[in-house]
Length: 295
Image: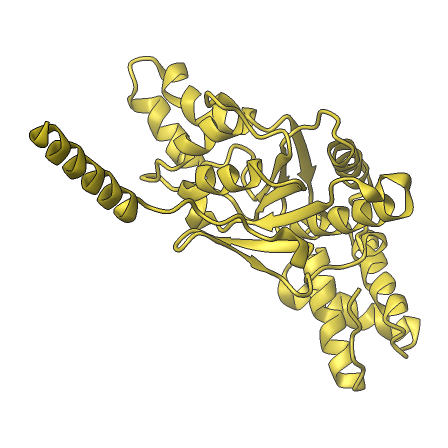
């Protein structure tokens, strides 16, 4: 009997010691402190963004079709209806990331004006390309949260020796748990298939079965149900962007001078895009001594 008591006491001490050294469950993150966050993988944290850097939706010109589609998809998601992951791909500087941030703001405003304002909030979480490997951990935290989340990765692409795209594929649609119902994934990229062309061409030329060699890499973009293409702006579209920015920020400049300078600016940059238009407006506002207001 004495031996039994000694054994029991030893087991109790061992159990108590194991409880002390066992890792404590991670505390739940408070998502009520902001509308947007940046995911930090190590240590795991959602860093609140006090003020999102974005342009009003109405100032994003020459992308009306893509804007309508992304807004509709975001509205459905915010209401708890089925929605697709979205890949915004194409010409640089044409407002891909700006549209994601503007769509998030617009849908949040619509929710605030409707009876749905008492329901789950719509949050924006940015994940950096370098932290894609930690996406499963990020989603595990979001899955248990009461809000709905747009997880956004800007300029997503993969290089020749990068294998992290495999974990992204599984997280988006192929994993055993699947994408959390309260999460949708939006990504921007200059590449339609997120892979460099020479990478896929080399795979095709050296493989025994060329079609199978690139199937795995191409299938990553198939995880995005909504593809939105962005193309280079025409001169008229570029000038429309410039004029819209100038009017919105009430810059005191003549139209002829504005057009002449904007065209000269685009020639020196060798490009016409929303980014080039905004860079010209910043230069113009600085010369005029005018402060550009944020949304």
